[in-house]
Image 1 (cartoon, helix red, strand yellow):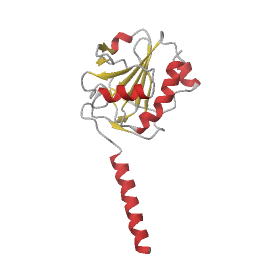
Image 2 (spheres, one colour):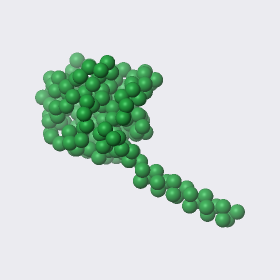
Image 3 (cartoon, helix red, strand yellow):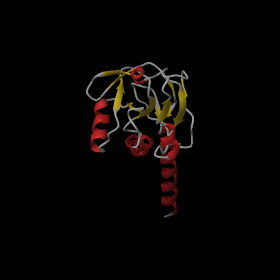
Length: 179
């Protein structure tokens, strides 16, 4: 009985260690990893201003991030395989529904290896948030080491807030920031 307990304990420790080391799941297309630490509140962008890159919307239409200048822009990098990403999406959805979309653009960038996964997830969860897929790798565009990562830009395209890791966005702080 004692030997069984030791074996089970060692097995549990190995599983926990493996999960901790492998929580970083890479995406071949974007080389960004998942982070479950919601305490981090900084993420880096390669520039302090809105980067230029092309996205694809759910209908397959190309969209340039620069097209949203003139509005505040909420960019979230996420994936369906990322538990912290899935955990924060309901709060982003609530923020989106409470925000004037004439003044704020929400850009949910899926880093899934297949955009269909993100579309199915959004449909299953009945999300109204607009989701996009990068038309090329984001490596070098956003200087992040993990997802979820969020960037908020002002109307001129200047970075005003960045968050690496999961967060609760359905707060008065974020609603006020996006007014």
